[in-house]
Length: 200
Image (cartoon, rainbow, N blue to C red; front, side, top):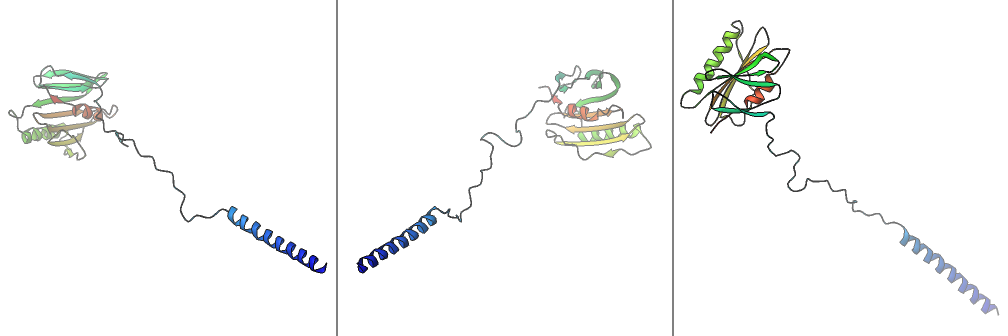
């Protein structure tokens, strides 16, 4: 009888030990395992094919495409400005409600004019506007279609007078801008002046 009790108690002890061991193993299996691999980061969005961060499409200049009546060119005239012939081979692009603010436009074919001569006469014109001050060269002028360019300006009693000469593939363009400090139309005039193209 004692042997049976001892055997029964031994079996119960072994059962308890096995149960304890098994429950520990289950906990170990259920515990989350820390992975040494980093969680995948969210993929950075990239532009679809054909897209880019900057627009590569060429935008058409703003304004109305207008042909000169007396010269062999056309340009885009923005709203609020008008183009008219001033005299032979000279046009005036002016602010519609202030004709004292204007840009004189002169064009020359490459066989009838020399670039250096046109640039030099432009500087002489600016020097005559204000004999007390030397014209100052503007170095940040950029015209993608021009093979060369020269820009100067000089202060006047009304505002700033800017002279621009640039050469295209088949045309030399001279622009003289008479701006008023209360109007500040020089940037508009330059933008329109850059759209000048010879009529084929």
